[in-house]
Length: 362
Image 1 (cartoon, rainbow, N blue to C red):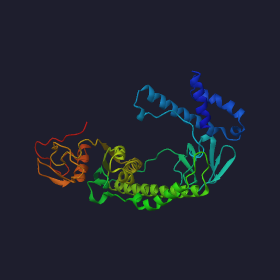
Image 2 (cartoon, rainbow, N blue to C red):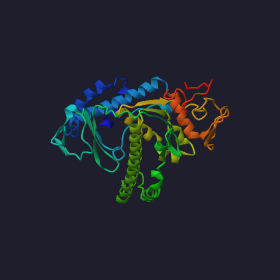
Image 3 (cartoon, one colour):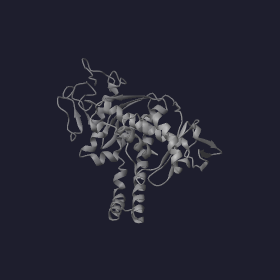
Image 4 (cartoon, helix red, strand yellow):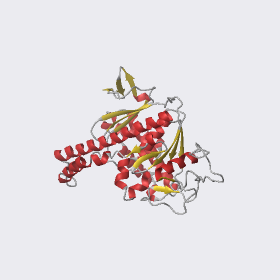
């Protein structure tokens, strides 16, 4: 269905005809009359595929009109290969229903689902997809519900890193690097070598041995991903439970992929830990304040003075030349997060030195 939309969109573009969402919706009627394989399927997921295609195309056109750099553009929708794209079907409220614990989909399809948890509210849509292991999953969209926690009477500042994923102002809430990927590297490299030996030639279908090795490698990747997610969610739950307000560094770890720390940074999964913390804080109604990361490693959390030169990564101790404070570099940055977020207006130590100016990032 996606490839049909791509072909029709390119043909309309060459003929200089409009090919928006309304035009594609009208084309669906003709496509269903022309192709028997489309008539056999329900029209609801087909319409949702058209909407997904139209959304991606509109975003790509907007990026082109905005004259963004090519690397930052979304890119026009392209053809998908059957053996590379996992199947996914999206059903709106009129395309599915839940009855006696079973999921009934449009087209007279009934599924017995293994529920991971009870749905907190009535779902508005469901996406049925197949993952890399061949397992079929259902993802429901439900309205978010806030589950407030009791007041803890404490605040915390969080600084992201690689040696330690999260360094906080509380020693009991630091998140060390679990190195899940490093522990699974030996097993993963074995399956990848098996795939390399059995890699099919271009134009030939993969052998049974290649498919088995690929499935085993995907299982290792899935296991590591779940371990990272579980570690991040458990840590986020503990931080949110023990603190009323969180000052979080608004750190974007994308640039680390081009540095010498790329492998260790990818294994740390800083983005996943940050996302888990934000979601957990919103779920429980905690006050979360993102802080701009500029100069957080150069400012002193005690007097607010700023070093004249950026500190190299090899230097892990921060020494203030103005007030003489000596502190671990990441701990000092975590305290700066609190001050910039306005959670410690008198300074982290409780006493603000006379004449000190706390420099905040724009």
